[in-house]
Image (cartoon, rainbow, N blue to C red; front, side, top):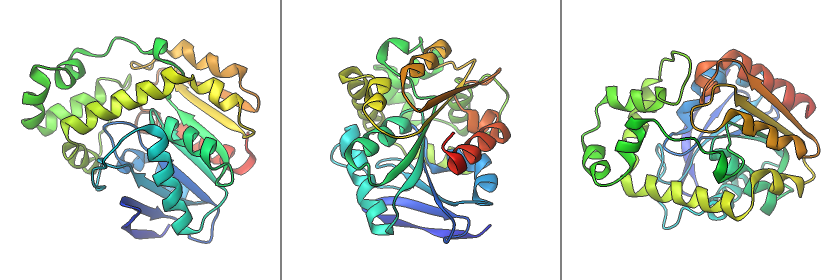
Length: 269
């Protein structure tokens, strides 16, 4: 596996793993995370693919952006992929990263050969009541104050609060989460909600002619796990639920998640 230094494309930090001559697999993180959240599955994926991890604007090592609406972020991602000269590619998105991936396919079907959505809630009514720690960190009046004094332990608890299995949160993920601004995070959450409220993800995917893999933890603590079956109506879609896994399959079940992604990238099934 070859690891290439990260660089910025269209303002977004990009990290390459695996051989450049291999087929490409693009990984998009969710809200409040970064490309490092994919770390545990990257070695397996990079053994066969040129893996491209993107830090979305305002996350990880990418600079903030004037706007965080989902179509706008997808357009920025398309420009980055154009700069790399890659098409078409398999795109995998975790949580709200699945919305960016879906919007990318809506805007630029020439760039996307297949889509994998991991823990991506299909519509607003599937959202569960969030853990107390996350509510306190996100919502006023305490949120803006606590955000400034978050310890590493608190950041790790924020991630594990939506997991069902014990996980080791990567150190680089903790460091990069610390850099996300409070206003940025609140804005991103609001824009994500607007995107799926305007039209559900299954409805958007139904309008696309692209193979889809949906991976959901059967014990997801952010989205109702049963809502994964809303994707059953999408043509060319396959739904996989991982037993005892919460919202972060890449951290909680990296081997199973990696195997599903490898098979899907190779066959579209």
